[in-house]
Amino acid sequence: MREIVLDTETTGFEPSEGDRIVEIGAVELVNHMPTGRTYHQYINPERAMPAEAFAVHGLGDDFLRDKPVFKSVARAFLDFIGEAQLIIHNAAFDMKFLNAELDWVGLPKLPMSRATDTVAMARQKFPGAPASLDALCRRFGVDNSGREKHGALLDSELLAEVYLELIGGRQPDFGLSTAANPSGPRVTQATRVGPRPTPLPPRLTEEEAAAHQAFTAKMGEAALWLKRQ
Image 1 (cartoon, rainbow, N blue to C red):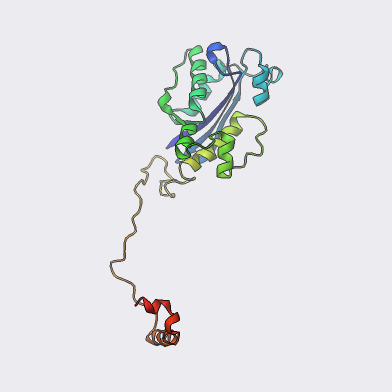
Image 2 (image 1 turned 90 degrees about the horizontal axis):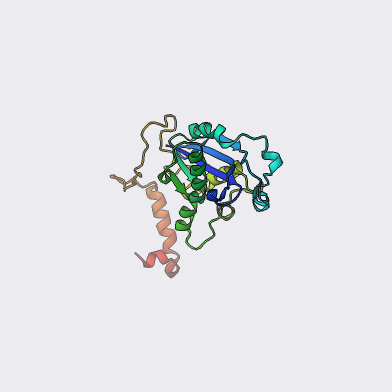
């Protein structure tokens, strides 16, 4: 099972008002385990960076001026994500921008059914609790000390750890999936432990049992377990 944990940084909140993507970061998971493969790309938005957005991610006009435009990196991005499910924090926001950029260059949009929203997951699991990425990092003990500003790749790496905690840890199937053959069948049934068909024989010798009985007899009423016999 292949998943892509993804994040974007933008010039603002609305592509319909001319805002654009300036950074994409993504981390690959296979069977809920990081593979080490990542995608990271800065993008020239072909417009000035608003001060409010710069304060969030620190990506300014001078830095982005020589970076490629979205059209020149779109195919490589689509090749990296392939048909994988996309794991995104506040998925509606990032999908809105990705689909706007894809539409502007004449490429098919990504269906919302491909996006798993970790904000919704966190709110369902912890009703009423903060669901920001920083709050979830604190909840799960994920080290986010290097997150002075938003960054698409760093945020994707942090989100990958948070996502794995939200679904029950790095190996929610307790390592029973076919790690050596990701395309092989996954074990999804839990193992049920029942009573032994034949009880194990006692390990005490007759002499030890007799000595214990003689010892407890001397304790009288203080031996609570004798009262229950």
